[in-house]
Image 1 (cartoon, helix red, strand yellow):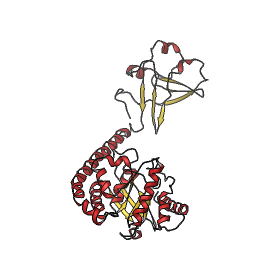
Image 2 (tube, rainbow, N blue to C red):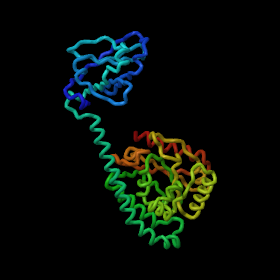
Image 3 (spheres, one colour):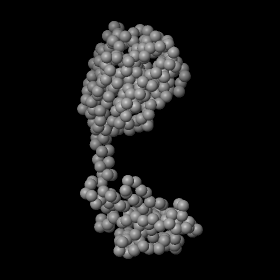
Image 4 (cartoon, rainbow, N blue to C red):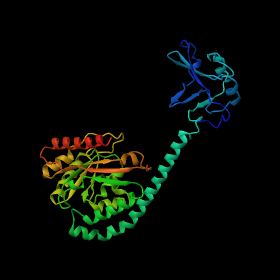
Amino acid sequence: MELSSLPSLSPLPLCKIRYPKPRSSATLPFLPFYDRKGAYFCYSVCKQGTLRNSYNTAQNNFLHISRTHDGESRCYFNPNGGLNRSYYNSKLHNHNKLSRYIVARSELAGTGISDAADSLSEIKLSSKVRGVCFYAVTAIVAILLIGFMMVVHPFVLMFDRYRRKVQHIIAKLWATATIAPFFKIEFEGLENLPSQDAPAVYVSNHRSFLDIYTLLTLGRSFKFISKTGIFLYPIIGWAMSMMGTIPLKRMDSRSQLECLKRCMDLIRNGASVFFFPEGTRSKDGKLGDFKKGAFSVAAKTEVPIIPMTLIGTGKIMPAGMEGIINSGSVKVIIHKPIEGSDPEILCQVARNTILDALKRQG
């Protein structure tokens, strides 16, 4: 990485000189250099708030940045000018005679390889462009399909109040059309899915906003649990209501109890429900602790737990970075059903199953 402010300045080698710990406070305003993967940055900080370049001084003189850590001083030198004395003279600093310098040396500069920062910027830009296109596609498809959902909704309430298969078919079309231009999904273990009419409790890890889109492509009419605030969004909130998504107020014990009761009521009427037992998206990619609500519902209603592992969604759209879409692919692993009457054991077995799959996939 070469700075445009020093166009003809050749890379300066780095050296270390050890000095006794300085007694003067004049060195305190100087910041130590930064070293990352072969690039060295060295700069001084004075009282003014703007950076300016001193090209002639950098060419002809020795640039020294004092550091008061363990009595070690780090410096740059000009091969033609030799090594200058240690910059412990507070006079220059007090009179603001020391210009501010930024000197950068990159191992990439002499090899002809493109600058890493430029490559990173291009990657980020392309991801942002894909993100904009992603939301444009999902909005257009949602607008086209929401009308059809509204038209059939009265008939769905009359003939299929609990499962609402037609609405989930429409949601599958929306999710498939949205993600098809951006990434592919691979399914493993589809034979482990129960029949469409058999109620079950589905659980999976949660890494990204894309998890919902991915799971909707399965075409299963399970009911998600969502924050009440999401229902306020136009079109998306309407579609969620018509699909029978279960609202939940976080940190509200009464709302949580009502949510679990509604889940059990849906299961007893032949519908399935879906839980993210972690409760929220994982920001570091690690599998979090599972809450026992989903497993209590399964134990009380005597239906199987269907664990699923989602791989790759967190890399394509990381948690907290919902405005970008990186390139990549997604894999969904459907594990064998788990049955039992002890929520604690069900929770432990389901988590271990998903954790083992994540470890195998790296």
